[in-house]
Length: 420
Ligand code: EPZ
Image (cartoon, rainbow, N blue to C red; front, side, top):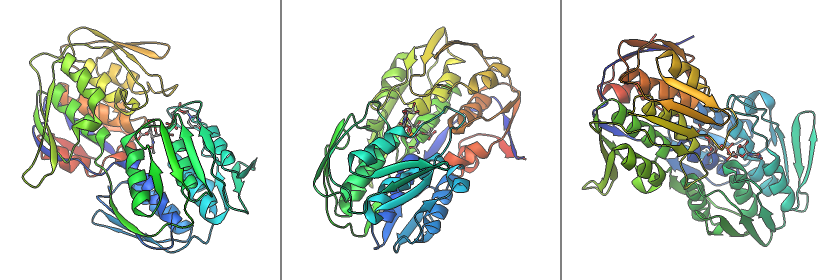
């Protein structure tokens, strides 16, 4: 099993180009199922997850090409099963449900099963399809959805805000007959990015980025070219890394308007962010580590609240802050697996229900630790860079899921890490 050896007391200093967002790329790839024509996606991050999703599209019969951060998807689907062996590797495979039912009137998608951070049910995805007239049955561990007469537009009200269920609902409603209104929709920038791409393909969508999205169904979508939005979670991870390692960092292509919740907290922590545009009009964020890091409480929430995907990274920052911070995780029921690993590095963290109480230390110490999920693994890399001594991180396949060429990019900014 591969491990990552990280030398401590290294500051993250220099410039990093933020890649396309994994959580935008995955639904965008599934949008390729919605037209026979070619969908070209640029700024596509080269990750194990995006490669896996491309494989799933091939499984459905699409012609897929992916090199140099450009992915093209063409042709019609010929296969409507998303098998367990693919879906169980990546939950986001559930995002083929809406496109297949809307376009072909049928889909058979394996139930994804839970994952490390929680049970992660898909009831909201199923209810959304039913709200649009699909007949959905659960049998043999599969979701079997049918709409032989096509989908009919309607009202979809989500009891819980769900990113994936909103994405499935939006894609399905694009080809449903009539008007659909999604209430309590997720507002993440990745959803807006998906809607912009669908609009470029001929869909009629308004309200994306708010909690109410309105879609006028059309009879068909055509090909388009779309650039994947910059990854705000990757940007937030690197910002926190610079803050906790005493670094000065420029994040190219990063959009500060997608990180307002993090920015509000970091101002109280003592970290100032400034944004600007390069002479070619490309956005950037500059971050400079503060002399002192103050402990500030945080509660995760759906966008525009503080992202759950930055909770582990923020906890690493609070592990070396002055004072005690309460970090409340409200989205997932088990997203504290990084806590015992940070404690092994000397962090002072106790958990009370969904709240982690972190009392900062002057510094952490390197230790052998284990990556448990994607975002936990990056928080361990950042903690290891700030710690004294060397840290060995095992099970780093989690890292490869969400951070393209991470080692190469961190090395150009002063990190000393070796994959062994
Ligand atoms: C997306 O997952 C992201 N993944 C997650 O990022 C992210 O943490 C999450 O949104 C929240 O922002 C992708 O976009 C590929 P949800 P998703 O549906 O869509 C419950 C990462 O590290 N729920 O918004 O699966 C669910 O259990 C990953 O990049 C239901 O109850 O998340 C959770 O408690 C991790 N029923 C809450 O809603 C459902 O049918 C939010 O989940 C669906 C979800």
